[in-house]
Length: 149
Image (cartoon, rainbow, N blue to C red):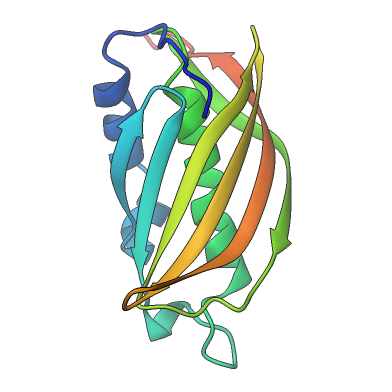
């Protein structure tokens, strides 16, 4: 993993506060477990309420945590006063979503002035077994936070 320098010394606090505002993450019971410059991990416990018809974790849920992991990896490198928006992604579903819990590992591949390219890998954990479930590549745009009066 490349070494990145955050442009905001409070990057971890800002990332964690933003994640806490994502009601979709609350709804699916996902937690932000690791925040480093250019890297985050999101953990999600298996729930039968988040599955498709065969009992596998739904691809949309897998994609949701992968997208958020990529976005927050990018956000960890943004200067104060800026935020991020995903402008494009591609996901490869590699294996059925099976496991007791899932971990999305998001990391920055290239951080530019306004565009950041990230990759997320999602793993299903079942006991001591770990299976690569999905891989996502995303393009993330830096956006200035609008002043409110």
